Amino acid sequence: MKADIHPDYREVVFQDVTSDFKFLTRSTLGASSRETIKWEDGNEYPLVKIEVSSATHPFYTGQNKIVDTSGRIDKFKRRYAK
Image (tube, rainbow, N blue to C red; front, top):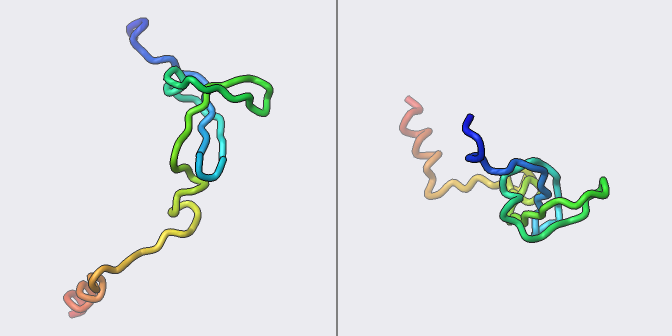
């Protein structure tokens, strides 16, 4: 690999702003963050705020609903029932 062309890959805290859910992971986004947060281990890490995470996404929380618009499923079943 070429030297000095890859972004800095380091530990970053992501915070879901709607549920205040936080998790520590590694990312290249930490270099663009101006905010920092003190984590449970006592170290400070860059903070990246996000709108949706697994704590608030409808698919992962079980609030996902399948909406059948204009009976598409029924039309499919009638068409291929033969």
